Length: 333
View 1 (cartoon, rainbow, N blue to C red):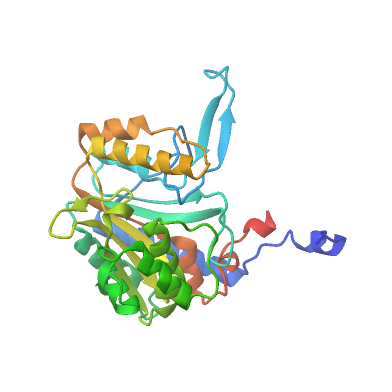
View 2: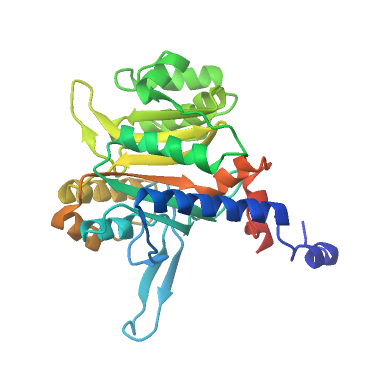
């Protein structure tokens, strides 16, 4: 639909009103106050990097620097998360750190997505994932006071969640069973799903499990090893990735890890990601060699989490979608 003169004349205005801007500023102040009291240092890392996340579920914006020192041009990527830079700070001895900053993900727009958004990310040396979940509960109870009555989130393992809602076991049941369940219970299926078990798990998680969340707040933890991302694997009779996600009012709000510190294993995962990207017909991405060097030098044992600040504001202010939480979302650029 073409832009009319009327629409063009009006859409210079921000998408948020003054009251939402005040709530936004208040939440940011409460977050900073919480971390100052806890002795967690605020840091600020670059938005541009020489490497991008190789995660096949993410797409980075790419640009090119052509100034002094790079006559032939230097490819750079807008960061999907400050994680790589923050881990370099941790390896250099920063101690506990947090960051409130903008991140960028191509191809993401909708009721709960915008290609640019604000992320709260923090890392706690010495904390287990369970202890970090306790801290998230304390943070949200304090930050949301007066907006939402936040109660500590119920915790459930990924395996138990699937067993409870589908009767299927992601560790033992074949992919055919998950396909059959999806065909019986979902109205439509994406094309070319193939035999990738993780793709079927993701589909059922987003279209069957998430819509059935009854709790105000829910932590899902101990993911399949194939979905470890940058988390450690805990061995045992049934190995699990030490990863968790938090849902608040059914909205995915935070993603946390017991952080992988093994440089060789991290390189293997980066290469595995790139092979998967190539199978999907997508570009290989450069590996972050400086991050790998930092891991080799010694990342302290720590847990970390990334929390979507704009989604938090959306829930606190009772807004209908993410765009209403942003002064200038994609449609107002």
